[in-house]
Image (cartoon, rainbow, N blue to C red):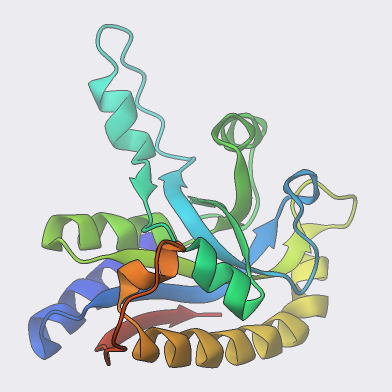
Amino acid sequence: ATTAAAVAVYGSVAALGTPDVVLSVGTAGGFSQRGARIGDAFISTKCVFHSRRIPDVIRGHFEEYGFGHFRSPPLSLLAQTAGLKLGVVSTSDSLDCSQIDMQLMMAEGAAVKEMEAAAVAWVCLQLRIPFFALKAITDVVDGTEATREEFESNLSLAAGVLQQKLALVLELLSQHPLDYWAGHSAQSAPSSQHVQSEQTL
């Protein structure tokens, strides 16, 4: 999932030109202890990898490369206006997670677990394009239900929420520049933006 998402975004930018912002849009698991519920939609504050474990006891550079820690633009006003939650998004290539994966996600304060965002964030960092993830929750990672069954049961609900929230977010982004949505003083004139989204369900 991460490789396909990264290649798709890089290829899109190469073919279509540089957008003002890239979104990774899709469904995900959520952590109830971070306030996630089925059908909630989140905007990322930061994206990390929880399955790229590269121990480096001397300086920690390799370990930091593995995690990534790709920060999203501050978008508290956008989240408030669109009725979205904010949280750390953690990425791997697996639907399930091991005990060490869970420990690392907890240490990072993850609210959302999914399979694309950090890879797309890395591409956008290299290309110097602002990036954030928009994810709707299908299953509770720290809950008691089996992940696959809960995901399949709630996919339609989460996809419907995601469709509505994405349309609203794109409309809001077309009205003001990205830095307006940080929640600081309002900008004087709205501006239209070229927005590219990488959607995954």
